[in-house]
Length: 333
Image 1 (cartoon, helix red, strand yellow):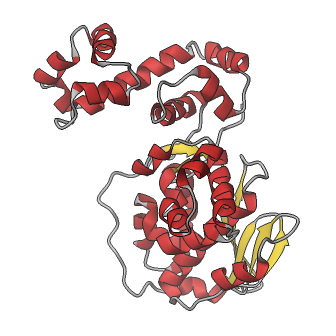
Image 2 (cartoon, helix red, strand yellow):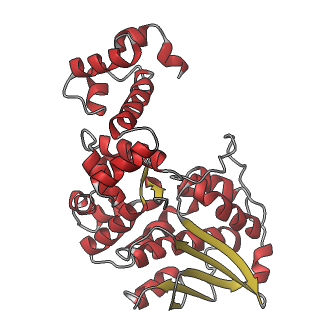
Image 3 (tube, one colour):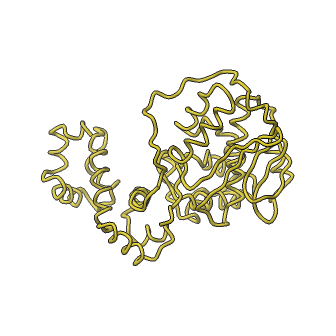
């Protein structure tokens, strides 16, 4: 079965600040993209890759700036990509940093993405493309990717570094002159986003090397590799907008409701069972936060009131959430 692309919300960069500074309506942008605005408070949460493309497209339209995505990634930089950025910037040489980015992309930031480095005739070719993508926002997303790629190389070769040329896909390049000024490169059309630069630059040493993060090694399994995991992430996303429903999740996946029900049944489960797993897991996590009241937790989980949440929790654990918290069980989660 085809995989569904997911990406961490942090990959969008400072999109809210950029739209607000330009006088745009942030709420309208997120509403058009059908993404809860609350996702901006959870940069590590995953959103559908297609939603990212729509957000970039509508944000650019809102402020009248087709090159906005490149500005976002250049401003945020690779350092803004969380653990991925920390690991990549800890490399000693540029080639190692790019290799690290290529290897870690699918597990730490974004699935359904192909990113490769090849060398031919003393020219390095670093490419980026998506395997789960529609045309809406595709070139905008490539501007975003090229900005991050450019920032990484400049971390080794200086802020004035420019590639030999850059490539984006599409039938035409929007705001070509402004895009070339922003990315510092001549742009041409192709089938994917690419940066070309002299291969000997791959040997560049990082002027100031940072230490790698003290976190466990990431899993080799790509983000969103299976349907159930993807649905769990989408349920978390929907919780930011109220009670998740199978119809809304199916629409995000681009599937008819009955098709989604059938695929879940083939895996021995149902949407209600997946929803319960996510709600129970989130309840345990939120109960471990002493500053969260039970009423606040109920609201976060989409329950009408504290009483409804308590009844549900009793069914899961055989005790009330207050008792669960008092026993100290939540502190071990």
